Image (cartoon, rainbow, N blue to C red):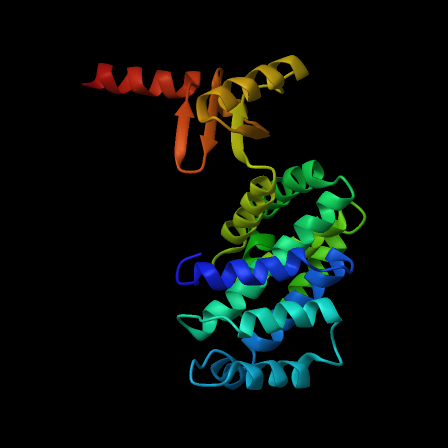
Length: 266
């Protein structure tokens, strides 16, 4: 994340890894702390002021959050305010990253990483496909609590707890649009397994053998395991289009036809 001190972020994430309590509880409490700090610029200013003693910052954190969060969350907050940040915003961005890491760890602990990767992608598609819903979750004027309630109504019981938690946090749109933030959360999930996320567009659903063959081919190309998020899109006509990060491999018939049409039009 641009602007965040790599060393300070590593220390914050190390505190997350050292936590002994429920990772999902830790994630929820860190997201709550992010919301509190986002709404208190004066407090953030003190906590990121390099001229303020670290012990004074830790004392202030305990005073503000001590009765509201668990010991592990306080340890992460203490690590965060002990770091050096280029701006006030970097502190809360790092804590949000820590919250995401905690939610991902919670999913991993119960074997839900595959489900989390797929569900985040499907939630992003759901929001993108509904103009009214997309407008609501992207509107910074709509309170985060209202967005969270809407997402809970839509998703609760249909996705894992980690998916709902990350979708709700993405709706706060702190560092970009809902889709952009949720996609970055998906990258965090994939990174836990040192693998890439591929968006695959095909005209018809792929069979298990085809999926396995494609995943293996992409893994050989990129040198890392690849998780496939498949979109059935009749407009591709035939063939396949794969997007991994900023790279697009487009082998669809519709693209070939368009290229041929342009050449003929000359």
